[in-house]
Length: 415
Ligand code: FA5
Ligand code: MG
Image 1 (cartoon, rainbow, N blue to C red):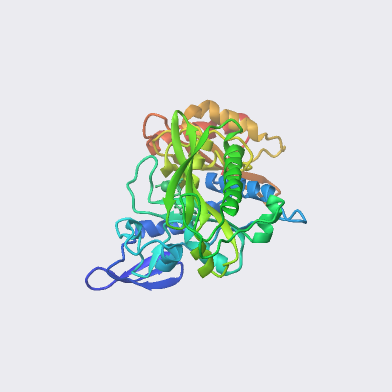
Image 2: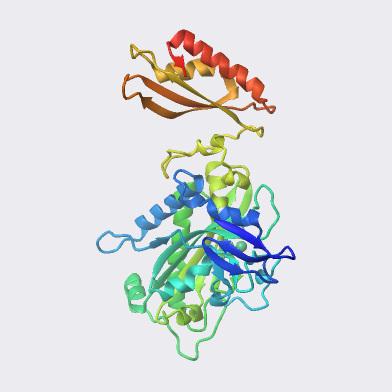
């Protein structure tokens, strides 16, 4: 949970975020509204579209990279707390001190030392430092940005890193590969000074094959894609993958060969690595036909119920909802004592009376009285009009008509 305590001049003297206290200062620009997003945990909400996509990506990596025993090679981190240090988010990734991405107008700072991570790459160096060599990090990331159909200040990323020793790379090539060049090595557009061309090319081809494989696993074998050369302070060379969709090229991820200095400082100087970072909302919007990035934060059952109970491999096509608000009424009733009650009869009767205005019928409770043995059900009836805001009075009339008809024809007794 997040809360703020104000000092006399109106600025919070300290911030409590996920049970830790932070002193505010002249860098503090997180707001209670932004902090409220930390509690949602959408990635781990069963059946949320971001959860389904995360599981699809994890399944792909588990299948693609298996150890000798068939065990997964990649470890998954999806609960790392989003408050990170400036060192983690920027310094550990060689992002220059004066880089624009550090500015207060781009980031949500807790104070001068801490911010809400702006990318999941913030965890890379510490995980390497823990001795990990193949991992995926999923998390919510925070960037100050405009809000529209495709931009929201909170979104989700997946990052990956794969480290290889010279021995492992030689196995991949079927031949001995020299990975590190001596002092005479020079940086070129194709490689870092420390790395050999052969090793860089091997890493590049495994990285690109993996990411094209992932894109094909998500969008089908026939997708059109292209690689674009880009710059990141923490990889060289670096690329972006663009996928052709509805007549446009869409950037879906950034990737590259991890800077040797990062691995050296993190305690893995004898390895070469590839890394990537991708935006989950962008992929999920394409995959499920979700038209607006704000829908991911919806608590509306009209949105959530379209994904609940689905498996990662299910094809799901989101059906847009009315922009008008929902209204719901609950009804509890005793079932007929002779025991003949078909839930579908109730659904059909309710649909007949409620029509398109009845958006959803959910069973909330199924109770059998311990003494009498009588059984009672409680349904939540959610109403919404496609063209206007329904008043509670209008809903009550329809709801009552459904209850009356059910009493009359199904033998139930409303409680
Ligand atoms: C990064 O965040 C790098 N950390 C990625 C990386 C990791 C590169 C490791 C190399 C090695 P970038 O800011 O481009 O890069 O964001 C990565 C992806 O996040 C983008 O390709 C896009 O899919 C998604 N993304 C970025 N900004 C937004 C946004 N405002 N809304 C939705 N998705 C976004
Ligand atoms: Mg980018």
